[in-house]
Image (cartoon, rainbow, N blue to C red; front, side, top):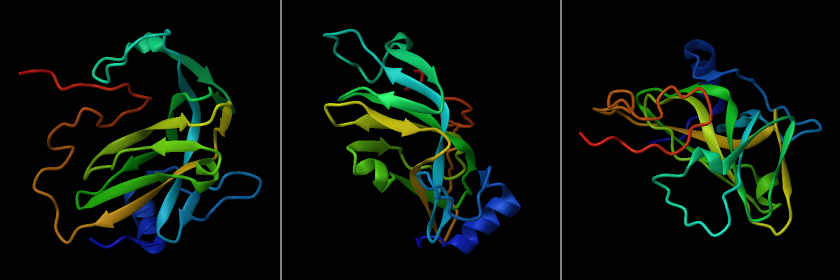
Length: 188
């Protein structure tokens, strides 16, 4: 399963709308970089955030976190509370090919300030805006910036297409258009 290079990423974005909007080069002047790199694509953070502010002394259940534990925030930046986290989404809408799996990692600029970015792999034929979890591991607030790079996605192409894709099994986060909270499959 080889990693795909810039030429392939550009072709898939331009001909098959794999990444929209798409920047065919790295944009870095005066900002945290985004756009096409040698073997990946740096995604940008949109200006829509959910700041996690639970009541004190609660025990969190990842199967059922009440939406009221989040405060909406929109703007050119978002300050992550000390030892807290936020949810954001990418500016780019992705359409992953059937024979591709991606891995996404946080930008080193943020990692060097104690900010950890978590995104699960994008499965074959998943599409949507990416919901990004951004954690502040420091005892002071840390600022993240909208319209700038937040994470880099790497594309791995298999030598054969999968039998069942994310789209085929009607994945619960398929075609998401906003920040999504955790969802559980309903019992049948």
